[in-house]
Amino acid sequence: MSGDYHRSRFTADPRREVLWRALWRFHFCRLIGPEDCVLDLGAGYGEFINAVVARRRIALDHWPGFTRHLAPGIEAVVGGAVDLEFLEDDSIDFVLASNLFEHLTQTHLATILARLRRKLKPTGSLTIIQPNYRYAFREYFDDYTHKTVYSHISLADFLTANGFLVVETRPRFLPLTLRSGLPVSPRLIQVYLLSPIKPMAKQMLIRARPR
Image (cartoon, rainbow, N blue to C red):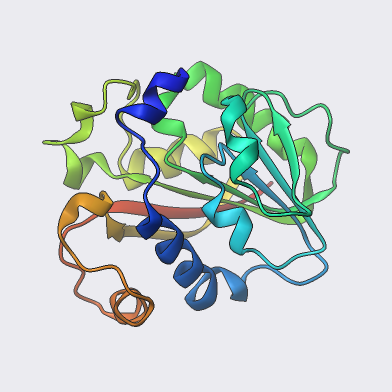
């Protein structure tokens, strides 16, 4: 994806910061400890990693412009998702890949997973958030950069086939985009996360550990 993608399909939106700060407060803070090392893979505008409280925070993205959106103290690395050799083996506690893997081929993803298995601690985990084709098939290819189709079942199977143990699957986690029409506020996001009924939820969450 070129910089043009960030001026067309993936533009800056202040509501995204509200969303990720609420997700940190009501979901991710329970999974990440203050002494952890956290990697945001495909960090985009940095809303997730900016919200994280941890000993070491690393953001990786191939878009050079992403660095100016990061909070002080975050290690910024410009590169592709396979460019992980700068990391020590067995050094990462938590990896987030949000709306990334649908943009890659399966061969590319298999390479990334093999490298992440080396970089994650034995107790570390990978969390994936992305469109679930089972529920988002009508809109899936409205994004011209989407290359590969995954449902919560196929992605979990792919992770298993590539050396990961799936420990959590949420087929419906969040609405597909901020354009869904639902209001964005911390309180409503908290209620949405807790509710068994999730209108317009077409993004899945899968969490896995290296085997």
